[in-house]
Image (cartoon, rainbow, N blue to C red; front, side, top):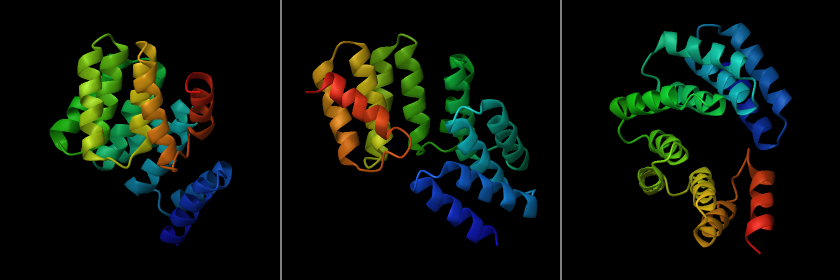
Amino acid sequence: MKQVLTMRSYTYRLMNRYSDAANDLKTANLLHPNDKEIQFMIGSLEIRFNNLEEGEKHIDSALEFDDSYVDALEAKAFSEIKKGNYVEAKNICKRMINIEPTFALSYSNLGYIEAISGDTLTGIKNIRKAIEMSPKDPYMHKWLGEIYLKYNEQGKACENFKIAKDKKFIQYYGEELDKLLLQHCN
């Protein structure tokens, strides 16, 4: 039953039916309350849609089962970024790199934090490293484009926005990416 609910939840997410996805995950959680992956999936979904407190509750629960669960740590770092707690997010990213040095999201999140905190070159370097590790990830190109845009590198920004758009798997940021392309990349 767990696999059916989590796979159906994933399918709902791809169809932008997020409340249905959340309902299936919550049902799976009732059946398997001690499952770190279900806790992570619920927490991640909640965080992505700005229900940070609820999301963090589930992420913390997943980390109680396994404190080196890098997917849950990434969701926690992402939540800290959304709250503007960059020092805490940066510490989490460094911890993820120590646990799993080949986890691309550690470097992209760290790079994003560095760039918006003023260390632009190091931030860009870390996001590029993440892209090398995971070249098919459109989100990293979107973030790199945003950083270039912030520092008046419109050509490089548009190049990365177009790469992200060409990847055709922008689930959470599709409309936002379309607006950036329309506004900055004619």
